[in-house]
Structure formats: C-alpha cells, structure tokens
Image (cartoon, rainbow, N blue to C red; front, side, top):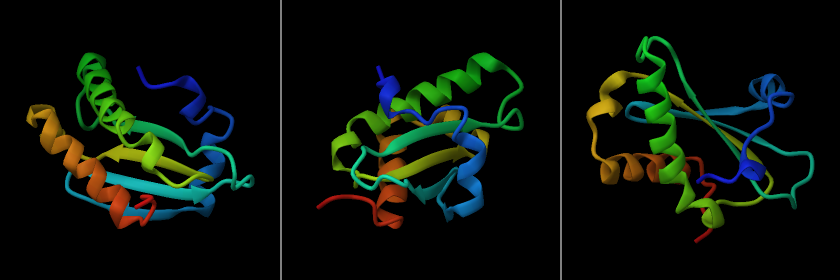
Length: 116
C-alpha cells in the first residue's frame, strides 16, 4: 500500500499547479513543484479525470496501479518535491503493469528527479 505520509494533502493540492513544471508522456502527465522544505520526502498524487472513465471503479483501479508503480521508486526520487501524475486517456486501462511502470519511470527521468 502506498504510504499516506507520502501523499499530497488536500489543502496543498490547489497551490501546487500555480508554481509547477509540466512534463508530458504517453497516456500520463507529470506536474512537479519544489517544496518549501527541501529536506522533507517527496509527496505524490495521482489524478484520473472522468473523461478517462465515467465509472469510479475503473478510475480507482488506474490510481491504484500508478501508486503501486510509484512504490518501487519512492526511495529513488529526489527529496523536496511535489509530484502529481495525471492520467490523460483510457489507453492505460488495458496496459499491463510492467509497461505502466516503465512509463512512470520515463516521466520521472524526464523531469530529472531520479537519484542515480
């Protein structure tokens, strides 16, 4: 399970897009912003629009898959950032987990937030 202490709080969520950098991938987008405290661990959020699927069951399934893919990279992401993943289209619904994990990693690399 994705730890709650690594998720973005609802009070912080509206403030992040105002001062963020946007990265586009295949079926996924990433919006990143620096935290005021650069030493705290990076926080994550996953957003799935109703345009992707009208059914909450499918949207929640996609969120769980992306969070699960992120779990293996939690310790590898640089500290002091907010990362919001947006799922753009429904093509990820039918994708296997390994490919989804690769796409998440590609976006993190594109944002240059991966500790090598």
